[in-house]
Amino acid sequence: MPRSQRNDNFVDQTFTVIADTILKLFPASQREKEAFAYYRDGMSAQGDGEYAEALANYEEALKLEENNYDRSYILYNMGLIHASNGDHDRALDYYQQAAELNPRMPQALNNMAVIFHYKGEQSADEETANQFFDLAADFWIRAIRLAPNNYIEAQNWLKTTGRADINQFF
Image 1 (cartoon, one colour):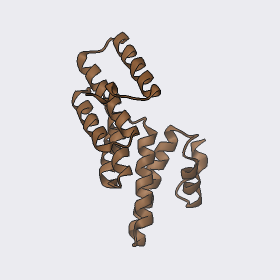
Image 2 (cartoon, rainbow, N blue to C red):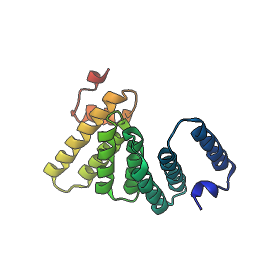
Image 3 (cartoon, rainbow, N blue to C red):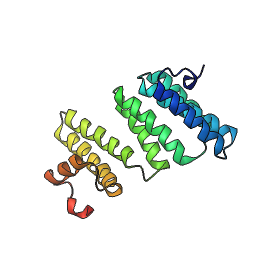
């Protein structure tokens, strides 16, 4: 039984009813509707911490979804799961794919920066650490250019480390 049919709390049930109604009203192919159902079930499973189930639903959604913008959000959510499980390299791959499909997705760029910053902090070698920090800076700069009012801590880090002139964003 699809997850959306076994929601047991009022908010999930309400969301499911509203989403199904909207989907019926919008002109969408059966394939698009199925992709959305898998995506919705993936989000629900992810919210419940059922990451294996969420990934399985996202993979099915990716097989069906043809719109690059929508695919980018599926890939982004897959990256979130892998990052939360500590698989940073896999998360980076999904974030990169999402950013390539949707170049106006600052949250994917920010998350890549966070991972590179973490890798820099974990590196015992100063040269390698600085390479990771430089990558983090590059991705944060790109994210901030897209969303200048966000990522305040990243802006402060860029300024205090001398990796960017924050005034260039405003």
